[in-house]
Amino acid sequence: MSAQNALYAQSGGVTATINASACGVIETARRHRGKIGRVYAARNGILGALAEDLIDTSAESTTAIRALMHTPGGAFGSCRFDLSPMPQGRSQYERLIQVFRAHNIGHFFYNGGNGSAETAHLIATELPRLGWPVTAIAIPKTIDNDIVHSDCSPGFGSVAKFVATSMREAMADLASMSHSSTKVFVMEVMGRYTGWIAAACGLAQPADKDGPLLLLVPEIHFDRRRFLAAVRLRIARYGWCAVAVAEGLKLRNGRRLTQAGGDGIPGHEQLGGVAPLIAAMVRDSLKVKVHWSALDYVQRAARHLASKTDVAQAYAVGRAAVGYALQGRSDVMPVIERISDRPYRWRVTPAPLAGIMNREKRLPRRFLTADGWRLTAHARGYFTPLIRGEAWPPFADGLPVHASLKLRRVRPKLKSTFRENP
Image 1 (cartoon, rainbow, N blue to C red):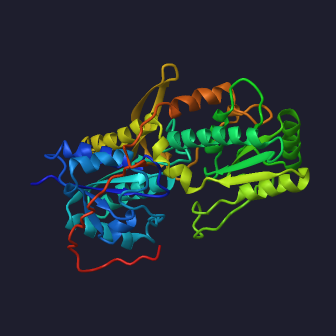
Image 2 (cartoon, rainbow, N blue to C red; image 1 turned 180 degrees about the vertical axis):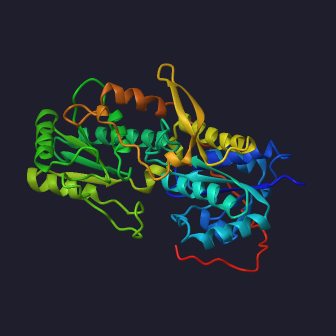
Image 3 (cartoon, helix red, strand yellow; image 1 turned 90 degrees about the horizontal axis):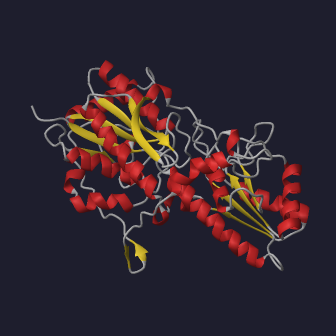
């Protein structure tokens, strides 16, 4: 009997290093051809699996797959769609079994965050109950760094490096112009309901002293009067003030400062737009010139400034996922375990999905000083190893080179189609 095939899919917001995990999966599976057959990729995440819209990665050259290591975005397309639990989702699982049986798929790898972990868990548990044995493994990915039981989330180290660099460079610009022009700069970063990315901006400021940079995170309720007093003080002391604000900044009553929209599904809310509100608040109250910026997609697409540590970890969890499948493990996620800070050492270990899915790791209060504006030494000890090292992509004509894939579609075998309104 021939070895069963594997199906890989990407889910949720992409990162600068998610494709490194794809590379880890595909390269490792190719080294075990006798135990794993072809590796298919679902186009646009689980939606591609339901639609039988599959890509045959065996059509890609070794060089093309290796180029995924320095390619941002989601090479095979991603989605924001969750499987429904039983019994409401029975038709979804039955459809997946049809597709998996038609293409002899016995291993499923889902590359995403907390919500995606639930989809992998449901496939790992429901498909065998309905008659199709499968190993289903979630591969961690999120710039938000909020996956529990993992010291860090692949994708976070690179975005932390980018935002800290961007803030340091913007602060140099601001200092140059502050005497006769702009006094305050506000930079909005992602992170959803946690402040990991905003806190990482604090690395832009030297350690062990106060400075002109303020950090605003959801874990500390926003107090308008207190914030404006802190800005006023820094303008008086330094001549200018920089502010890093998380998109999910929250008031004491629990309301987010902004919410740009979404599809109505819990956890899918589109946050954003807090920077112009903060900027207007400062401008109107302190009567100074203010500039603001929202990094948005730029921060998670910035593969040109990726962390070498992050790239290595993203590849390692993809490789480990295949190793777990070969061992017969299912319903787990390969997570990062920190062994030591100095020297920085880490390893990949399996964690059950039931303890990960739909949970959220918050920024610890001890990472910020008593006033909440700056990083503590503990936070710097955590963040610094994650942003160390450069993993430059190749360049041509002055621009980074990305993977060029054939994305050859697997011929559908089912006559029926599955239509779901995501």
